[in-house]
Structures are given as structure tokens and as C-alpha cells.
Amino acid sequence: MKRLILIAALSLAGALSARAAAPSRQEVLQAIEVMEKNVGGSAASEAAKTIVIYAQVSDDVMVDIGPDQLPWIEEKWPLAKEEARTRQSILMAAFVAGNIKSQIKNDKAEDDTYSGWIFAIDTYHRLQSRGPFVSPAIEALSKLQQQGKLLQHAREVHANQDQQDQSDATPRPLARLRAWSASPA
Image (cartoon, rainbow, N blue to C red; front, side):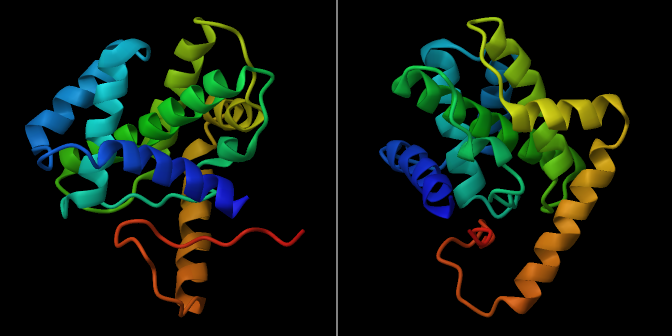
């Protein structure tokens, strides 16, 4: 499970590393706007790259990524392998976009899982209109949102992550990505 998330994050990051310079705050806000308007095509793909690079290199934001934040990464969808990978990447970028947009707006470099989920849920529904598929994890998050319980769930995930981080003395390979552990099998 941990390997799948790491592979997804690293493959997206690897594809992004060819970019010459780190994007500016204005460029990332423009990229987020592109994703808000359209989740398909090359413009959305380029926007996703800009967003993830910014999250990795900017000191203005911090995004926690792990199975608690991206529960859909571990799901198997009945889609062609490449289509499933594309949708996973778009949803991960959407989570990052929502998360960092909130941080930029509030001028506070503090993970905002809730805002990331809101953007990912919206993106999920827009992706479904391009071709139906079901993500049980995002459906569950959407249900929590409809019940008014999503913010509390995000707070619980954040508190659990903080508790895990305090007990985990291993060094983290990526400065802005908090470490995660796979649940026991």
C-alpha cells in the first residue's frame, strides 16, 4: 500500500522534474484555476504538474500525503490501467491543489486536508461525467461532506498524523511530505 502511494507520488514528481524553474505563487494559482475549470486534456495535465512541483519546492505550503489523506490511491477501479493511473494522478493533484489554495489564501503554511478533500470530491464528480467509475473512498468522503462531518474527520486524520509523527523517529526523505506507515496486514 505504502509502495503504491509512493510510486504514484514519485511518478508524478518525476514527470514534473523536467520543468526548468519552480513555479511562482501566481503560476500555481493560475494552474489551480485551470483545474477548477477543466480536469481533462493537456492543460489540466500541465496544471497538475505545476501544482505538485509548487507543493514540493515552496516553503509557503505544506501538504501531508499518505493513505489517510489519499485513501483512493489504494483502490482498484474497473478501468484500463492507463485511465485508472491518469484519474488517480488527477485526483491526487486536485487534493494538493485544494490544500495549497487554502494555504495561499490564508497565508499560512499548514496542511489543510479538508480543503484538499473538497477539491478532490469536486474533481471526482467532474471525472465521473467523462466516464463513470466509482471510488468507494471518495464516495465515503462525499457522504461525510453531505452530513457536515468531513471537517471533523479531517481534524481527526490530522491529529492521528501528528501523534504518529511524534512517535516516529525515522528521518523523512521529502521535507514537505510527512511519513506514513502501511497498516498491518
